[in-house]
Amino acid sequence: MQKIPVLLDIHTHSVSSGHGTCDTISDMARTAAARSLQILGISDHGPRTAGSGGCSYFRNLLLAERKRFGISLLYGVELNILNEKGEVDLEDSLIRSLDYGLISMHHPVFQSGTASFNTTACINAMKHPGVCFLGHPDDSRFPLDYERLLAACPKYGVYPEINNASLMPAAYRTNGFQNSMEILSLCKKQKLPVLLSSDSHGREHVGDMKFIFPLLEACAFPAELVINCNPALLYRIITKKPDADVLPGLSVKDPATS
Ligand SMILES: [Zn+2]
Ligand SMILES: [Zn+2]
Image 1: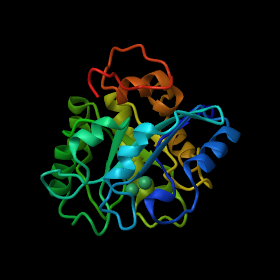
Image 2: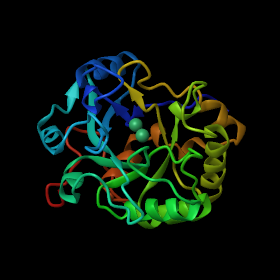
Image 3: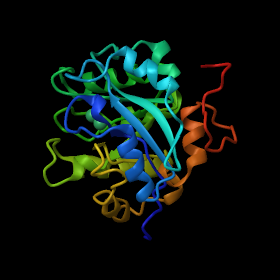
Image 4: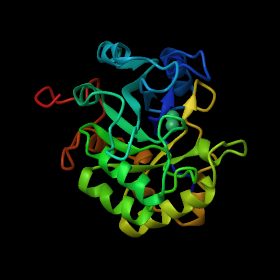
């Protein structure tokens, strides 16, 4: 399998996530441009993560520049799933005003339970408008029923992520390799597109998917199911308009729905 072209990375964190980096959105955009990405998405942690930005930070992103250093910028959020009901840590109207939401389970905000419990929590969280991606569903500290979870994805227009940070040798998540392989093989069978993400905290790993490529190759994952190769597919996903012919631009929100 040829190395696939990664044109976008939309799970990244700036200084506003409150941990791990002092890098600003501009610092990250400059790096993304140097690495020949077309689109950079900033998805700082929701307010329940210690030290992260509050509602006013996310509200002010609506006014942030859409182009820096020639890169198209998207502004989203990595929401914390709070409980089995799938409640998350930003109100729906604010999530909808952003370009996209990822939903993730993090210690200590989410109290992990059985695979059935965690899967129900994720599926309920998918129902929030503006949620488009499942963040790092690859961590055995939060076991999931992948068949049930991925079967629910098309119903809500939510897509799973393969997370490079989960595959790093020093990763604190567990069983990232085995779980990512299982997700990829089910997505291939189901023809469900996946999002590749660096989950970079700051500039260092922006656009870096190097630990993901061997997995794609090992399961002969088709490039046409990789969202990062297809900005138009990304825009259809985040606008929840499966048939739209939307190309990257300065604004992706339909004023009638946002
Ligand atoms: Zn996360
Ligand atoms: Zn993250």
